[in-house]
Amino acid sequence: MDNPKNSVEELGYDEFFESSQKNLGLQNYPVARVVAEYREVYKVRSSEGEFLAKVTGKHMFTAEKREDYPAVGDWVVIEELPENKALIRGVLSRKTILKKKYSNKQENQIIATNIDTAFIVESMDRDYNLNRFERFFVLAIEGGITPIMILNKTDLISKVELDIRINKIKSRFTSATVIATSTLTKEGLDDLRKLIERGKSYCFLGSSGVGKSTLINNLLQKDEIKTREMGLATGKGKHTTTTREMYFLENGGLVIDNPGTREVGTANSETGIEMVFNEISHLSQGCRYSNCTHMLEPGCVVIKAVEEEKIDKDKYTNFIKLRKEAEYYKLTNIEKREKDKKFGKFIKKAKDSLESHVV
Picture 1 (cartoon, rainbow, N blue to C red):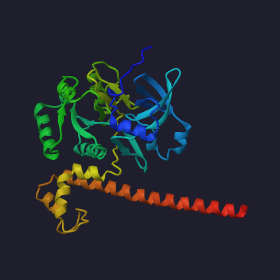
Picture 2 (picture 1 turned 30 degrees about the vertical axis):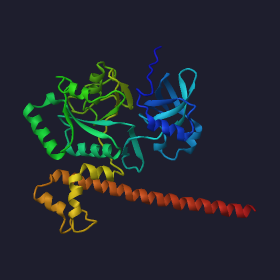
Picture 3 (picture 1 turned 90 degrees about the horizontal axis):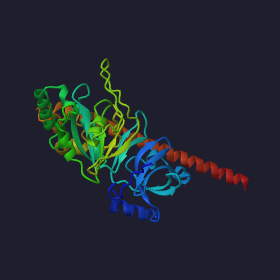
Picture 4 (picture 1 turned 180 degrees about the vertical axis):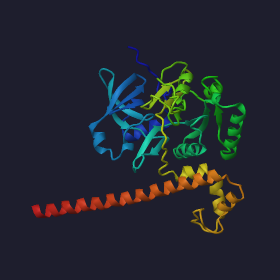
């Protein structure tokens, strides 16, 4: 049975990860890249091939949160076992991280790690929404990742309508790279392919049914990822991607397919919000109050700019919404830490009391 192999350099390994491995004191073990995540098991690829790997019991015991476990894109230190199995002895530091907040939970969900570029995909029919683009941009930039827009299924609208949408995008996202694609007409696929470089890592983000997997299949030039057509009656995607997985292009690029998501919680993304909405952030320095909320205060230059149509009203509204989410997350996270601290003190007091009675 063929067991694919890549040099660690082809998989994206560099001095950053080598330094992390030395800091962990695990130089005597080989490293591998996590290319897929299943229930309690990971598929990893190294210079020796692919292995099904599990984390050690020690790692499970010391892990404090979900983010302490490996994710697709991570570099891990492994101990090779017979029958293409392995133990994960450590997770190397992450160069970049893409994560979102779970719905109605404090915990974050890691989408992928050590990504260079995130392709944010929206289809030109039911899914088109500039606010969602901004949400994904915030997540990418907060994680140190370059976002690129893909307007997919352009065959569903006229050239005139496409040009109108692209012009509106460029007025709202002044420095964004935009690619218009269609897997039916093959429009834009060469442009997309040219952006993917050897040894670099990319992920595709977007709602179910926007065509992420079909785009990757076209880049792979084979139907490696199973997809299903969109339901005609409901207009909803019936996409079969349920796990995150990394695929390997002939030109050496590494791409990750992700399950579609409609809810994109931004969690603690203050830096990302500031950078995505840099025009508003820059203007806000001229507000009368240093803690201006840009909602009701007199002398707010941001509100004035919106009223004078110097700032897009929809962009301003989305900025306020995303900032409120980030502030709420930050507040509830502080409250959670306080509760944990109080609980820790309670446990310590109970232990001390028990020990004094024993003595």
